[in-house]
Length: 208
View 1 (spheres, helix red, strand yellow):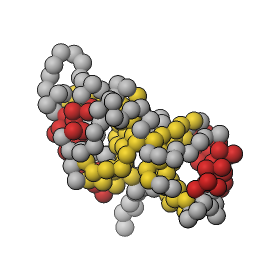
View 2 (view 1 turned 30 degrees about the vertical axis):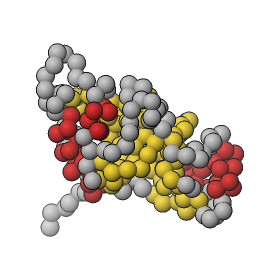
View 3 (view 1 turned 90 degrees about the horizontal axis):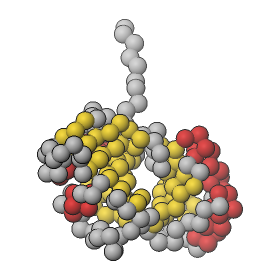
C-alpha cells in the first residue's frame, strides 16, 4: 500500500499565485494582495460581567489595553482586534507572538472562552490607493478616510461572505479575515474586483 503524506495548505493555496494581473497601467500596480500565513489565531469572548476583569488580566500579562470598541492594538507579535462587545480576535505571528498569546490565554482562563481559530480563518492583506474602491464593490460599510481610520475594525459581509476587517495604515492597508471554507470564493471575488485597476499578488506574509 502506498504511503500518503498530508501537507498543510493555507486557505488561499493554489489561488494566491504571485504575479501581476488585470489592467496594465505603467510599471506600478495600485493594489497589492498578500496572503497572511503561519499565524496563530484565537477568539476571546468574555464571560458575562467579566469584561473589566478580562481587560485587567490582558493589561497585566501584555501591557496591551483591550479595545472596548471595534479597533486594533498590537505589540510584540500579537494584534488584538475588538469585533463586538466582549469579543476580540487575537492574531499572533512568530515565536514571540505565539508565546505572548499563550500567556494571554492563560491570563484570561476562567474569565473568557478561548477558541482556536488558526485553522478556521483565512486572512489576506489588501493595500494601495484603490483598496477602498475595490471593497466598495461588495461592502456596505463607509470606508471613507474620514469615517474609517487606521486601527479601526469591523465585522461585516463582503460579497455576501462573512468578514472581519481592520485597517493598518493610511495607504490604506486592510487585513480581511474570512472563514476558511469561503477563502477561494472570496479570493475569486477580490481578484475580479481588483482587475479593473491592476493588482500584484505577493508571496505570503507572516507579520502583524
